[in-house]
Length: 117
Image (cartoon, rainbow, N blue to C red; front, side, top):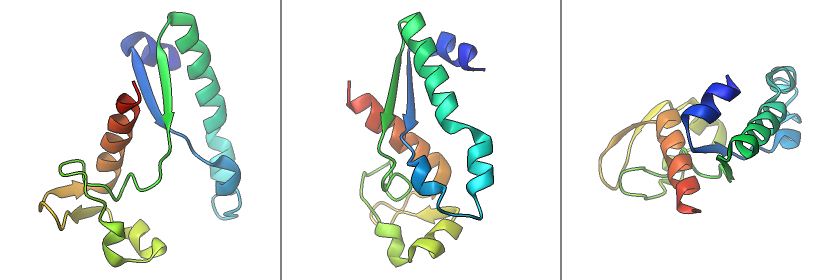
């Protein structure tokens, strides 16, 4: 999988996750360690170096809250953190765009990563 990604793309952008912090959530700790995110990132970095490609990691802060269309941060629409995590789709209060939280976050992460070029 990692070889296919690296051969297919010249630049790969990922969010730089705080795995140690995430492991403090005991409900998710096993799933997080089983996912081996840091191993995936290290393999991707090795193969990007090998094939002359670029791996960029960006801070994931607020990526699900920034509208990809108008770039406005909606600050979780006034919800607390746990309420915001339940929101899957939202309408930007600034431009009215309907956004899927995960797709929007992925697009914001990509845009942030490419902006570091």
